[in-house]
Length: 129
View 1 (cartoon, rainbow, N blue to C red):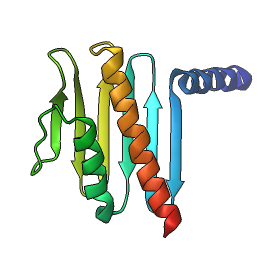
View 2 (view 1 turned 135 degrees about the horizontal axis):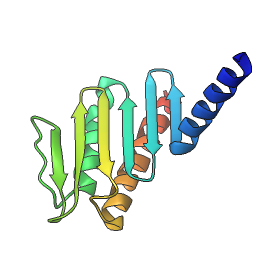
View 3 (view 1 turned 30 degrees about the vertical axis):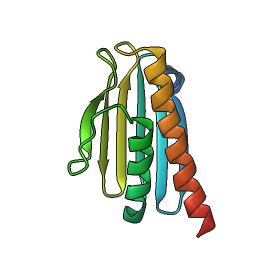
View 4 (view 1 turned 180 degrees about the vertical axis):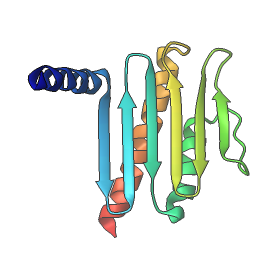
């Protein structure tokens, strides 16, 4: 009976690992995680509060045609009529939620570019210090 339970737990764990592709980077106080499944892309980052303006600049540059609330820094962006995703930026934290089923490939590529640029900025700044 113990073996059956162990095998079931192993299969559940394995199926959970296959479901998502995870890219996680940790350098000191910087944590950057990208989880991607067939239907969703999730980006979560924690970093120094002083780096918030750099991250905001990347988002603003990449989403130049989209509305962005500088004060709130938390909004759902609409790039075209169909493309929507959530970007929440607070002091030292970034959260992006992107639904692949509701958006097209161009919007996906844009969000991936944002994630890649943020990862580079956060990890390169950490290495330099």
